[in-house]
Length: 265
Image 1 (cartoon, rainbow, N blue to C red):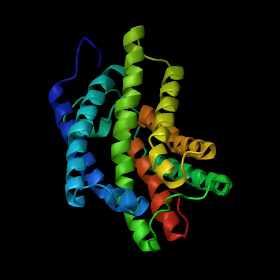
Image 2: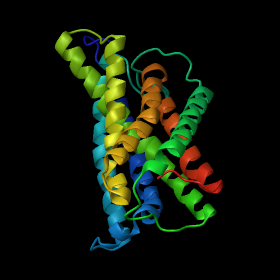
Image 3: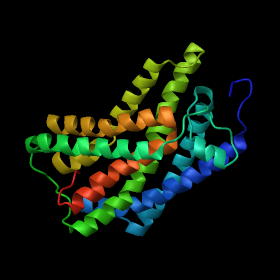
Image 4: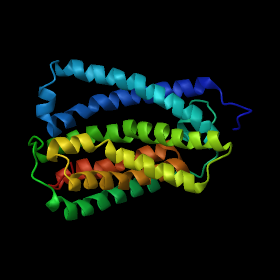
């Protein structure tokens, strides 16, 4: 696909609508996990919880649908996108790619999650005492809440950080330079998006521990591990494989680990 032969809008609009709806459902599914993670904070919201859930889901539908559309349109210029979904909806994938290899995505996501678990064992003893510990829940309830929250990570965060933000960074470089970004630029975009992925988790970490230096470094580093893997998959295999890897990582961290008696907030 070249600028002289722009991709049609209709398939991208349809796909953006599908992704926006998926983001809305994933946002609603996140709330049981939030109720466990920060019950006091949600209790202070002066609205009934169903109203809050509906409002947040509608906001996700609109915002993530719009961000997805922008990401898809920009992606045509730089060879990024969601090739499987684009082909399914009759659109033109941004570029020819190697086979998706979903088992590679699952294995990479799970491996990064295990790396996070191992690093947490070393870092977590250095953390300050929790200011607002998560609400107590048995292993089955924690795992179920983690399963539901995993859809948010795999869908919403990938739409924000990879399809929109990473694509935007590379598209801007392509516009300024008038040519495709090189591998170094792709890696810089992957690293920046991964760092911002960690920044997005700082409010939750601040609620639990406060923002000591070790808390900030832990939050940025551990989230960047998963973010870098997802960024590479987005570049090389497409958005769907980044989503699958992120979802697989969250299953290990928020489903398997609670069932084993350990969790990673």
